[in-house]
Length: 391
Image: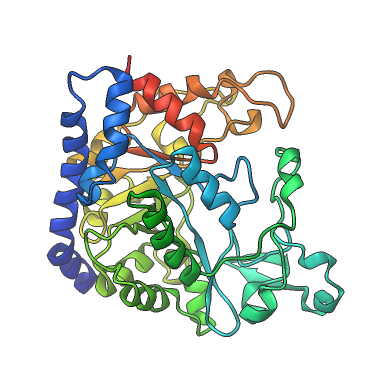
């Protein structure tokens, strides 16, 4: 732990300063401009090769692509996120195959995100495993070779909320991380502006125990494509702080620690008998420690503004200001348009697939001073940002 922190201070200080400059620089750049002009200026600034300083604030991050409109973690979803104007695309959640390739899936269990359940040739692969302490039944990427996974097709993960997305079931295969890195370069050339991605290491402790360590594989591919530097357009994230610490030793990319509910414990802490919870990590002391090896945090929105018992929003916490005091940026997750995912006061009716007052919710969260947000609906996020900056 001590060596991790020392190394993070050496490598991380410059990156934190750069990210701090991104926040201040973008804010300064937009002073005095009309809202629409500011938004347009922000959009072009991040594509001029100035690194993280050019990302607009608040940054609109396409969560698993444009997953409000296409099955998540497919090139159809990633392409649409760029078409809609996302500043950064979360491509993707990284899990390994049996033969050691990294692929993009929300979870290693793929029964709900692919058509594997309808494939009789893989019926025997269905099994129950303990994933981060939770018994989970289904089909797992680590039990398939890449060639086998490539025969599968992606499907909509939450059809009850997004029935229209099922129209696109079966159209796209599972992308590999290497394909994503090539796609990033191709799209950058095609669109004439730098495309940014935001991959995540999923369940790294679980996979390391299986002999399928994620961080070394991520670093190897980033080095192969020349994307392992502090100005590279690849931000890395994980729910496990030790995964971020390991990445901090391997690459110089911007790093973000994801944070779940306050009473939860990162699974690497569980394995190491570390009693700390997320509540401990978001104290001033915990945030200072994170700032020693990472440049940002990705908290759940409830850590920024908690909810009352009735599901409406309470008063904001001090997390934004506390994180900013130690030089950390905040990219909370996840804004979605559908009613069930919104605070109660922003819902319209009770239909599970109906949109609520998402613009009102965006405005409330932006007002806390967050530096960006993950959203399944990048177009909505961009309109909300333009409206917020024009206030």
